[in-house]
Image (tube, rainbow, N blue to C red; front, side, top):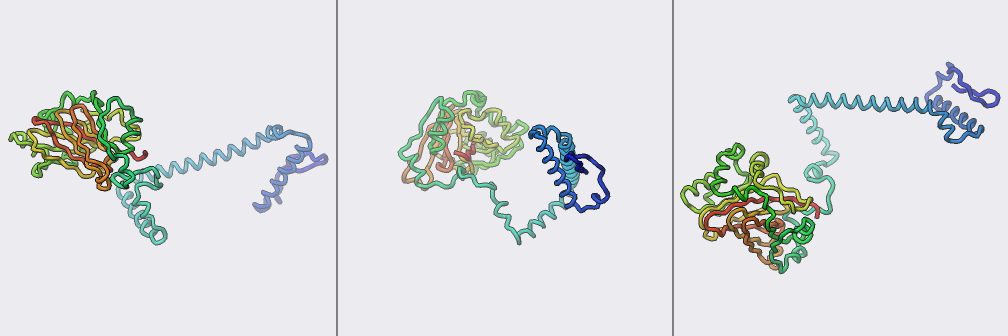
Length: 359
C-alpha cells in the first residue's frame, strides 16, 4: 500500500499481513484515505485536473479492463443459458413441463395479483387515438355525412383521400386507380371458374366466408352448378390468408392512393354474378375492419350503403353505381353494405379490407 515519507511524497510498499487481515470495510476505508492523500499531494504540486487524469490513466485502464471483462463474462453466461433453454424448449417433454409449471404459477399468482385484465387486452398500453372498428359512433359523428352524397374523384392524393373522406367516414368512388391490375384483362366467369378448379392453391381451398342472395347457394360448387344450369347466381367469397389470398393477389394490388396508415388485410374477396338479376341484394354484416374497398372489374353493379343506426335520421342511404375500373371506399363503422349487379350478363370484381388505427 502507499506510505508517506518526509516531504509528503507517496511511495509504494508491499501490503502488510496486518492490512490483509483487515475487514472489507476497513480495507475500502484504507484505500479511500490513501487515494485522498495522493489527490491532496497532486493538488499541492499545482497539477491540473487533466494532468491528474493523465497520470492515473494506467490505473483507470486496469480498472476499466476488469469491469469490461466482468460484463463480457456476464453476457457469455447469459448467452449460454439462453442457448441451453432454447435447445431444451424444442424437446416436447421439456416444453410440456415448462407450460405446466408456468400455468400452475399463473394460477397461484391470481391470489396475489390479477393478471387476467392484462392478458385479455389486445394492447398493454391504451392508444388514445385508437378507434374500435364498428363501435363508438355518436350523433356528433353523423355531422360529417349529413346531406352528403358520394363523390367520384380522379387523381386524388393519399393526403386528400384521408383528410376529406376516410377520417370523416364519407364514402368515395375513385376512378381509374386500378389500371395496372391484370384482372382487368383476364377476369370473366369462365376464367374465375377455371382458376378455382385448376390452380394448386385454390382448387382444394375453402373460402373463409361466403355470401349469396340465394340461401341455397352455399359453396363455390353451387355457383358452378348454377352456371351450368343457366340459372342466375351471385356470390361473394373471402380467400383465406396464405396461399389462396396470395394466388388472387396476382391479379390485383394495393391501391397506391391509400395512406400509409392504412394496412391492407391479408385476405381478399372475389365476387361473381351471372345471369339476369331480379333486384336481389347480397347483404353483408360486419367485416371487423376499419374500411372496405370494393372494385368493379367487369360489368356494372349497385352498392347501397345504409348509415349506422345512430345516424339513420341524419344521414341518407348512399346508392352508388360502379362501372369497370371504379373502386368504392368507405368505413365499416358508419356504413352497412349491400350489393346488386345491374348488368344482365355477368359481373365480377375484387373486394378488400384495411385497418387504420390512428387518425
